[in-house]
Length: 328
Image (cartoon, rainbow, N blue to C red; front, side):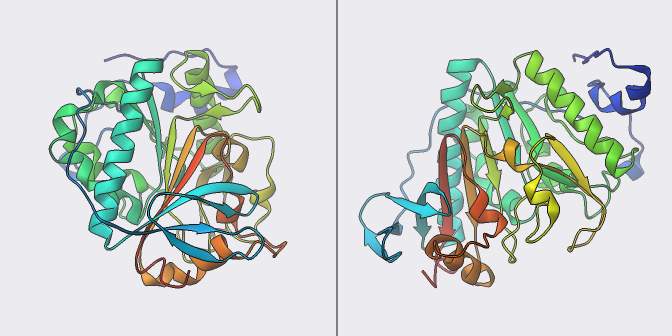
């Protein structure tokens, strides 16, 4: 087990706790949850199981009308271009998402010797469930994974609202990822302190080449972000109409008055999100159909939802089930 030792100014020592990547002892009441980092190793054999895609949607940029295609095509989302896949069911979506993630894992492990993965909370974690089943559980090189959160609620790690707890119970506890490669927030700090601490950790990991850096923006460039979307069009903890959607300097910031409880959270900013090499937006359920329609079909509005501001350096792929795509 390794330990990240970073020299910080004395005023920053309180913020450095999250950089201690070492074994942690837990009482039964804490559910034996690792508190910091985790990574994974395997051999990248890819699932040959076929899935039936009900349709792939493309848009005519002048008419913003979708048509059914037999293969994946590009569509405009705000100022970005993305690929859209629609599946008969959330189950088929999860199968495809596992293949997508495993393929990227193999690619970056070969190219960089590591794979930096950012996840959100909510239903996204459920959609990752196929990765903990054969063939992926035995084939992915889990030891080279480094896992981060695009946002987190400032609550204890064993709290029901914790994105860490959700990911640990459903995903991280089921894969052989080194605990030092899972980067959770320091929940002993305030929202502002936890955000500063997380950014300090990212800066160290950029220096040590665990996380890439964008030559174009100077912000960290994660290999993939696996993101969900709220029914109001928010991504991470960047909400419609909130000033944080316009933050351009910080890597990680905080919010104390989240429109959605719990109120205190930390979040990556859009410059970090949009410096990503790959982003998958995973959206399922009829309750999000209206926002999916606005996001993918409304290119006229100047009042963009946060999800419409997702515009990565690399590839953007929407993974939709039939219910979420029902109004396209």
